[in-house]
Structure formats: structure tokens, C-alpha cells
Length: 262
Image (cartoon, rainbow, N blue to C red; front, side, top):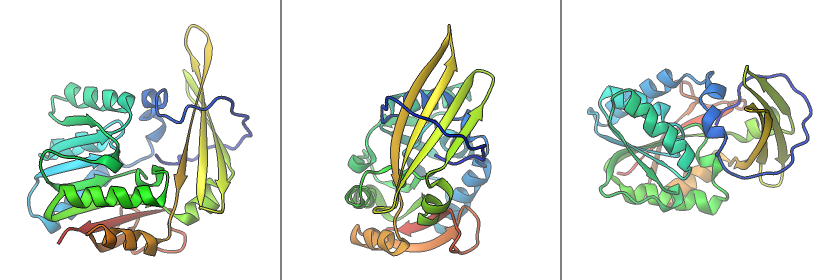
């Protein structure tokens, strides 16, 4: 997920569910700042440079499927993978409503298993950061390698250590719309560069109801990520500051990494 700009205010979260249950209903609303069209075009550009055709693309941690919708419109054969039933339900409806076809599978990315090898595997909006440990990242990269055809491409992004330390940190954010109020509380942990994100939703139903969800994101040094890719049988090819074409800098908050199976 991403960090929209917001006003800061202290929140005191209560129960935590460590899921994307209620958030699935509001995810698209709170990520309107994400340039999904630009992101999909960037992925397509990378694929054209590497493959010169629009084939099969597997999106691990696909969430509500907005990227999948755009790639399907471009002619890709899309498979979305996510462990959240709620997210997949939203994604499936989104593509069906648009008259597009895609396959959505409830599966943990650390156990990625495809019926046939993919041309392209992607993971967007810090899905890799959501994995619980470096071992899980390595396992995921290994599963990607196993399910990617030779000559295939793996495109993913990650939040940086800089973002965790300096942007997310221990900050709080508030989002207020007509029917839902969101309090976002971060708790930064320096020992592993992780941030515990707690989301408190106050939803206007028959009365105001409060729902709380939490999850932890971890950031890693770039060279550690490269080492895990290589250990998994993947070759790091390119790295960029966000979804643009410029090289990363010290203050990059998101990296786009391209790896190949050669």
C-alpha cells in the first residue's frame, strides 16, 4: 500500500486483526493518489523492451486488481494472486464489471504455484515489504524463479529504509471522507527497519462503527535484495527511483527493480 499525504494527529488503536478485511472495501478510495495508469504503462514498457509481446503476467499480492485491470485492457493474460479473500473479491468484480477476463487465485506468495510458467511476474505497491521476514522474501523470490519461464521478467517495487525511517517513522495520519474516517498510526522499529501500521476505520453504518487492522512492513538494503535474487536463480538487471527512469538516490522512498531469469 502507499502513503497519501495527510494531517497528523495522535491515535490510540485498540484491537488488531492483521488482515485486509475492512480495508478491501476502502482501499481504492485511499489510494487515489497512485498513478496506476503510469505504473501499468511502465510495466508494459519494460515488457516490450524485454519480450516484444504481451503474454502472461502474474501479479502477486494483487490487492483490488487495478493494475490487473489496466494490463488486461492492454491485452495481457492476467492472473492475480493474493492471500486476502476480500481483496480478491473486489478485484474479480472490478474486472467483470469492465467486461474483462482474468484469473484470481487465493494463495500466499511464499507458496506461489502456477499451472504453467509465466512470461512476467510482478509485485506492486510494496507487496514484498509485507512479507514477515527476509526468509520469506527469499522463499518468494525462489517461488518466482521456479514459476517464471527462462527469459522471463520479474518486476517489483519496495519501500526503502529511508521511507521507513524518515517518512513513515512513528508518524500518525488522518483521512476523512463523507462515510469513513481513517486514523493511521505507525510504530517504527530500528532493529529491523520495520514499521507496524495500525489502521482504525470509523464507518458510518446504522451507527458509527470502529474496525481496526494492522500489519508490519519491513525494508531491506538494496544489496541484500540483490543477493537474495541471485540466490534464487534470478539476475538483477535494473533499478530505478520509483516508476520513473532515473537511478535511485539516498532519498528515494520507493524502488522499482527488474530481474530476469536467464
